[in-house]
Structures are given as C-alpha cells and as structure tokens.
Amino acid sequence: HPRAISPSTPSRLPRQILESQLSDGKTKMASPSKSMDFLRQKKVIGGSASADSGPDVPALTEEGGRRITVVAAAGGGNSTSGRVDEAGVVGRLVERESLKKTKTALERATRTTAKPRAGTGERISEPPAKKADPSAALAFLKRKQPALFSAAQLAENRKNEDNAKTEPLRKNRAAYPVCTTSGVIDDFSEKYPLAAIGNEWTLSSDRVMGGVSVAAGAAGEHEGKACVVLSGEVSTENNGGFVQVAVDLSSAEDPMATVDASAWDGLELDVRCPRGEDYNVHLRTPQCTRVFSSFRATFPTTEGGEWGTVRIPFDVFRGNGPGCEGEALDVSQLRRLGILGIGRDFTAELSVAGVRLYRN
Image (tube, rainbow, N blue to C red; front, side, top):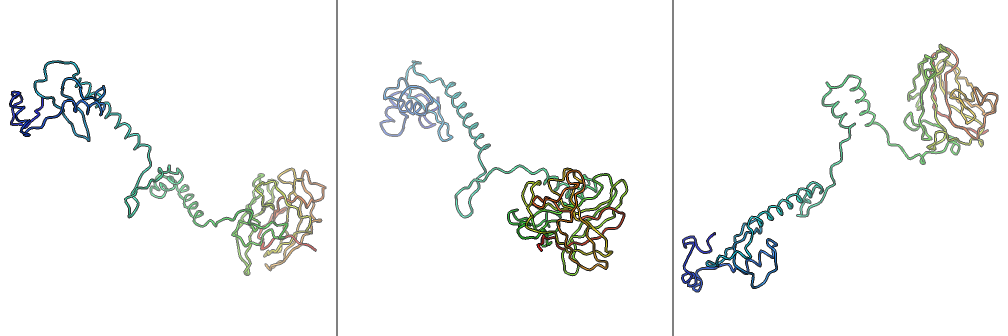
C-alpha cells in the first residue's frame, strides 16, 4: 500500500509511535469513513454515505484529471467484508472516460464552427460550409487546367463567363408596359434581344423545316436610332424560303397567353432597307393550329437606306395555313408577331427601329 506519511517513515510503525505522531500534529491521516463517503458521492462504489462505513480499505478514484489514492490506517485487520474491488472500480472509470470521449467527439462533429467576435471574448457560431457547386468547380478547372479540355469547351466557358459579366439586370415582368395599353410593342430602348414589353426577340429560319436559308439578328444603330437588324440569305431550296425575328405579345408567364388589340386599328413600323425589298409581318392567334399557320401582310421599303414609317391595317392580314385559311384575323387574341424576309431567293437586310399599335 502507498505510504500514508512522509517517505522517510517505514511503511509499518508500531501503533504507539503512529498515535504519538498524530497527537503531535506531525502526521495527517485520511479519515477512512470520510474516504468511503467521498467514493460513494463520486459513484465510484455503491452504498450510501454514513459515519460508520465499515472496515477501512484502499480505493482508487479520479478527480480533475488527478489520480487519488485513499489509504486506510495501519492495523485495520484482515477482514475482507466491505473491501472495494479495485479492478472493478478501474474498469468503471475506464468505461466512463470512454463514454465521455465518444460524446465529445459527437458534439464536435455536429456543432457549427465557433469563432471569437472581433474585440470581444464572445464566440459566435457560423453555419456549416455549403457544398461546392459542380458547375463552378468545372469552370475553375477549365481556367486552371486548360490542357484537360478541348478548345471548344474552353471557348464555351469563356463565352459563359463573358455573358455573366455583361448580362443586364432584368426587371420584374409586372414592371414592363402592356402593349395594348401603351401601344408600344418595342422601341428598342432595352438591350436587344429584350423588347420593351419584357419578352425577347427570337431568330429563326426555314432550317427548322429542312430548308437551307441562313439568318442573323443583331442590335444596330443607324442615324441615331437603336434598332434590330434582320439579315441573311433566303433560299427556296428544299421547299424553304424565310428568315425571321419574332416576339410574344403578352407579358404573362404562359406562352399561350394573348392580348386584346381590338381598340387599335393596325401595326406601325419604323423600317430601313438599303435595296428597297418587300418584307412580311405575320401575326399568330389561337386560330393558327400549326407552327407554320399565320395571318400575313406584306409591306414595301424605300430604296436608298432611308428611314420610313409603314402602317399595316389589321384588315389587310390574310390567313395562311391550317386553322386560319380563309378566316378573318381575331385581333382580340393576338399571341405573336414576326417580321420576315420570305418567299424568294434574295439577300435580306432590314433594320427595324420601332413596332407599335396605332389608331386612325
């Protein structure tokens, strides 16, 4: 057993010498009963604390990270009743420490990161880090490791990054004027392809049906007027023969939504063409049951490239294709407007600076 007194003192002393040293105050000895009570309070051993705890026996416990040995007075006898099973006590201590470490590990794995607030001792919690965006990671690799990707992939990545930098902020759809209220379909005050009514102009050609015409649409400016320029090579080969820019007239989310233009008399366009070619305006309504069905009107342009204004009354539009052939245009349900170079082999080049509704 560990010594209860100074190291120079023999481990076993006659009872008389020990008692004399205790009476002189030179040696302090742990009280066996208090030691047993301490163990029971710390739940190292069972039973309840009392003034009479039975024979004095050595025991082990831990407190504050320190290992403590409680030693009984010499001459306690050979009785084994009430002795502590030292192996059992140590086993329980190891088990308890293991559970404590497991709990601490779980808490560290689930809690948010805490950092000290600047200038104070207070610690603030931060949310867990978000998962990485795969597309962002791919873009990063294309910049840092271009050898891993083809030239086409790298060109597409640069184009996407440029578009993200230059793309204008979009207003809410409700912020755009309704064309049947203002009369303006597009004055090209917004950045092309965005129209003044909040929808975008789309470019198409007869290639969607097997043709070979080539179309191009781009923002332009002539004599201080912002405009869209429709250009390309129109070919009637393979039963084709058109190039087109078109826009939905309703600002509603539903692509099948329509507008009621019955309070207006027709369409008005500001146009310019270097060669004085004829072009078409097509209107679509729910009457048009096929993609190539529409109500059509042809308008002339002035040769020489001067700006001119063209008015097209609604009553000159004629139905063409399934659903609208031989029918009158229902102006209370206009869905889509298209401007086209169509019907012959020629080089198209038409600038449009304004598209409006008009009243006589």
